[in-house]
Image (cartoon, rainbow, N blue to C red; front, side, top):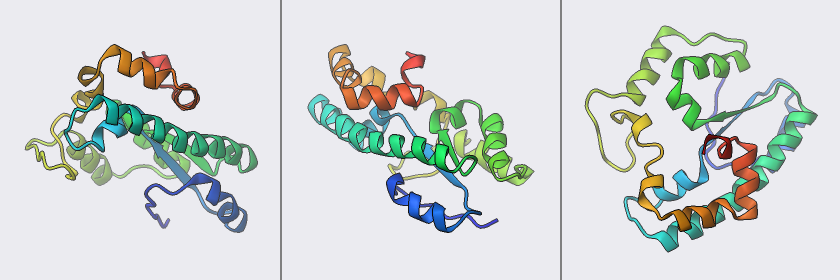
Length: 173
């Protein structure tokens, strides 16, 4: 099993790759675009910037979401969509789902590593660190930073509606 991590690859480009490599599996790892938008503000709380970034991310993610749905129908079993929030909430369950996608079982070492990354005993609060203390408590911090009107503006955007509904984020609200 060989693994490559490709950040921010656009899924429409994968169609050609999957056509040429029938033994390839893809994990489409996603996060709520509203949370990503806040993360990319690096600690700033600016409602206008957050709204613009979130809507822009929704447009990008909508293209990926549509492509993912098409790829799943064209190449059943080759693409798995995995939500960051699910992995954080239930790491053991979603590790099994992830590894099951490759017909593998997560090793004890992997399970331990993920548990430590998600719940480090010592918090490293640098912006680009891997280990955080209690990640679950931080994943929805954006909800407490912005007004209901700002959140509604983003959530009601047609592009955001498609992505948030398709990925199951509206069901949680």
